[in-house]
Each structure stands twice: as structure tokens, then as C-alpha cells.
Image (cartoon, rainbow, N blue to C red; front, side, top):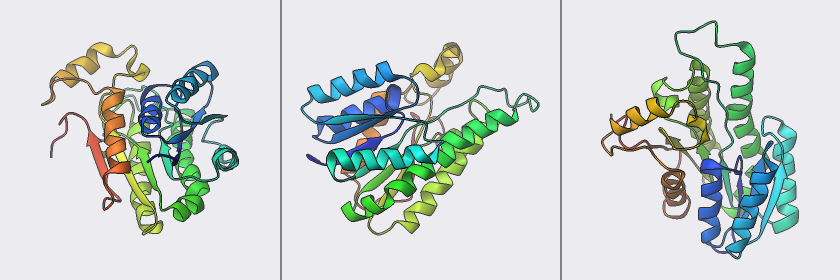
Length: 245
């Protein structure tokens, strides 16, 4: 892994931060992306550089396809190659599923823009370089995309669409590029703020009896990147057994 280059979107905190750090521990140079949290992104950059690898920071929302092109261009300028793309940037709006009127048009646009279009834009922008390097893509989706549950109907639909794109791109970009999804359940990040009691109860009811940490998701991502050369088009749940089939 040493000397490879990864773009990790939405990596100023939470799961994205931890995946970036996990890859950096293995000698991977990192492009950090953030939308609005510059201070946090700079802190992650400093953490990564302490591990002895290089890191750049690129601002922008992936919902804007120009950000995807900017991420690729600035990464190539800094490092000359792209081996790994982790599409972690995501957003949600908490709306009770039976509140159909509450699932407003602007919420749909925001979630589909970031969670679906943004993911696709980044894959498209990096595809030529990833093919050249025989690289891989990890899309961070959610168990909501398989269950129809989650923070809102729109969020679940956006993650289902992201899983579908994963399967499509696994076919389109093969054999040079592997494309897989990680679908976390409840993860202890800022996303659950205000919903801690409900999330704790859900997590304690799982076979593993706890909430996932960003480190749990990062280890699963690293496994798919570094140790799964014959796995593509898969959706790996990281949910403590919450939704065992």
C-alpha cells in the first residue's frame, strides 16, 4: 500500500476521517475533502502528516460535479496518480417515515445530490486514473438502502440508489477497477446527535450488542481495499448483525 494515493470525500470527521487515517497508517498519500468544516479538515491533514505521508485538502461539495473534477485534478497535480477512491461524503434529513408531507422537495434534492449524484460524479471523474492504476472504489452507503428504514424515506432511497450504482460500475469498470459498497448500521458519529437514546437501544439489541465506531467501518473498508482482490459489486453490511438475513 505504501506510495499509493487515495481520495476520501467527506473526510473532515467521522467515518471519512478514520478511513483516511487508516490508509495513511499503511503509507497511502491522502486527498482530504470537506464541504464546510475547514478547521476539522486541517486537523485531519495534520494527523495524517504525522504518520509520515503526504496530504492535501480540497474544499467543495461533491453534489457539484466541478468539485469531482477539482478533486481529481488537484490530486494528480500533487501526487501524479489515483489508486483508491472512497466516496464517504453523505447527508441526511431526519423525517419520520409516516410524515409524508414532511419529506420536502428540497430534502430530496439535497440527499440525492450528495449521496447519489455526487458519488457518481467522483467515480466518473476518477475512472480513467483508477483504470490506469488497477485501483478500487469504496462507496459508503447504509443498511437503510437495503431495509428502507433509517433517518427518512428519502435517505433510504438515496442509499439504495448508491448501492445500485455500485453494482453498475462494478460491471462497467471491470476488470481493471473493483467497486464495492460498505453499508454501516448505527455508527457513533455526530449524525446521531439528538437521537442517542434511540440509537443506543437499537444497537444494544444487535447480536454484537453495541454501536459501531468509525474504526469498525474503517477496518472493513481497509479489508476490501487491501485484502479482497476478487471481490467486486458487493454490499458489505457493517451493522453488528442487526439485519441478519
